Image 1 (cartoon, one colour):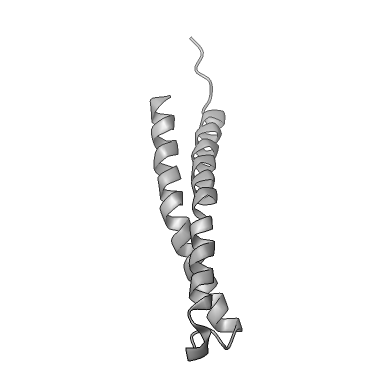
Image 2: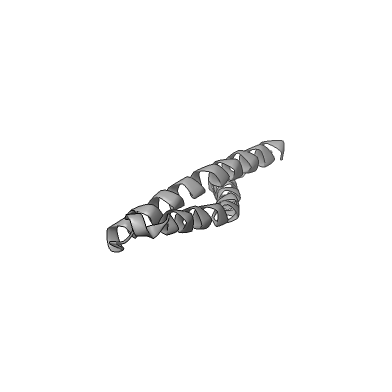
Length: 86
């Protein structure tokens, strides 16, 4: 049980850190690709602030995804392991 909690904590923290980084970079890439006004002098950083806002809001879903992934791995491994009979 302690191992499961440790893995949940580890994967949860990994998701908490990695997801906002990936989401922010993806939103910035898409914004600069499809909106020609992004990055121009009249933009005043609107595209960048939108990307950061979405990135920050993705932190808690990233935590949930990490914990769910740890639980999925645990129960899948438990299901695939044959039962030991005395």
